Image 1 (cartoon, rainbow, N blue to C red):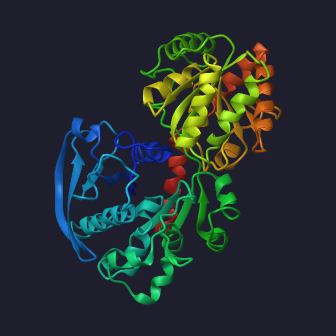
Image 2 (tube, one colour):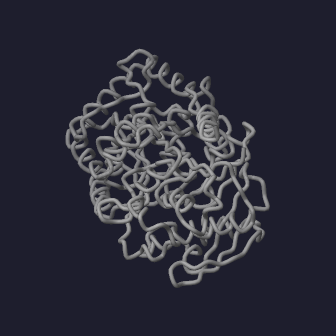
Image 3 (cartoon, helix red, strand yellow):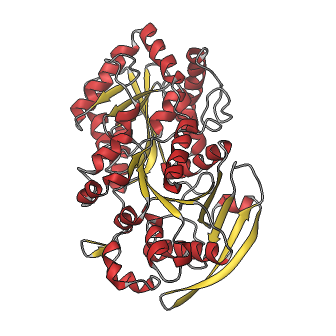
Length: 472
């Protein structure tokens, strides 16, 4: 079986969020299971492409509206990723230093999809399945089945994977002239509420769609930025498959980015060594519980509540908790965190931006990871944390609800709250603090967390089973 994963992010080439981690791991694990899986993504002006060898495998051109665009396809000459990687470069669109943040992103992603389809059509590349990841490539199912240029590819099956349904790629209908010609009576497959909506089009035109957890799949019928009725109507195509983690990259027993490697048998001493070194590095005291937030400063992640949580907690003269924050995003949220940092340092340390090595060090050093998300399709941070014996403190939504069981339940290993409020987070932090004081009980849930299997092996197999269903 030949499968192409189509995405605008893939670790380690270009990473903004969890999408990159998924696309950088899933095909590798599928290849271990006998599937010919590869990744196709845009060419970005990133350090990775300049420090590794690529070769040109195809060149061509196409019209996007009245504009003629040239494209070049590069393949990775090295096999360190565990799967074949192809990059598509389109001068002026797919040659930029950043993944997102440009005013013509609609044209950018349309150029990527155009170039991809022209490449596979003109070079007789016929995958059995194209696994499209998120709205940036959401027009692929429509283009395959309904446009004159690509009818020859209509037999290829498509799986559309939704990593975050809050982002849908809306574009004004004046961009419709950029699409290849299609039967105009099928315009409704592109339209939602008077705009071209790639996410809604993908759901209607794909052979099946998946979300990155069962919990998130259930939530989309109630909250999907206006697409709720569509998810109800298309539920027969839906599948929930929880993400996994790449144990080649996220494993405290062999992680080269942390000071002291450890296993579930040596977790207590291993985490102590990592904690002492990490706290010295970021300017925190190493006594007391270390709670960490890693992620984007975004409304959906609940990051806007962080500063209020800090003010509320430390205004009570509590001194048995230190907090580390690693992230970037909304400038207003960042400013609020800066104010809290200035007021409560050295109980708080902050790193604005993203640093992969620092994230690994934080997981190995921390006692608790905080995820107060309003929306969390799957979440990977809690899975990384569990593998490192770091206990998740999470809101019970989406994939967090699927992967974290509260300690109050049998076989529990985390702390879960439901109400999105400062008071709920505060009381749950205090519950975690009280639990950590019982050293034996804390040791039990730490080892239990590390023993959980959230590797990609099982999830990759579920994707393969879904591909086989489509091919039958």
